[in-house]
Length: 183
Image (cartoon, rainbow, N blue to C red; front, side, top):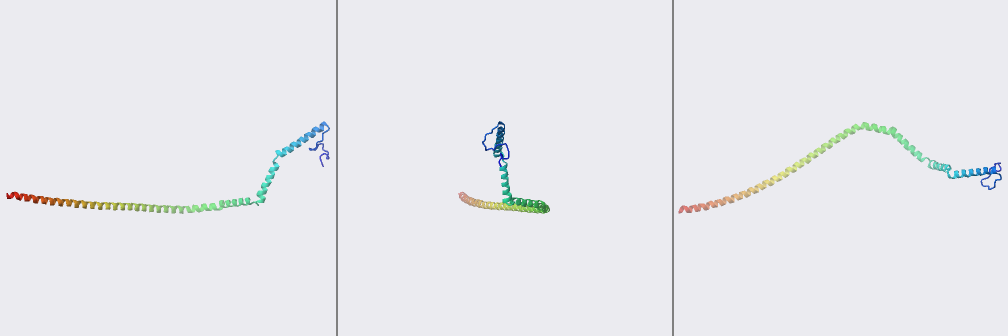
């Protein structure tokens, strides 16, 4: 059934029949212009059908095709977080509170032991330095004593030589004196 067969006075948009009367033709042109504008509006400005198709595709992609995998994954993460927040974290905090005194005592003991070891190493290092200093001084002393013995030997040799020279001088002087006594 077409619009004309129903008794409508509006002409079909594709009909090119001229309107006979002045009153009917203005209504028909207005109706035609309204329909044309409505069609232009729906094609250019009304995006609801495109958006609805995209929404249906999105829902189909994420709910139907993927079988609610993301939702199950999020539910698993949520349940894990709830379990941790309700059970594991408080138990861990209680365990930490109960063990913190023991750990602190052990750390203090370990610190004292480390300080003692460091002190012994410093004392050993100081002892080693003192021992090295003693050995150096002993070597210097031995070198000094050897040098003194060497100098003493030189002085002794010079003394012996000077004494021999003096002895010869006095012997010659006695000879000369004995010559003068005979005259």
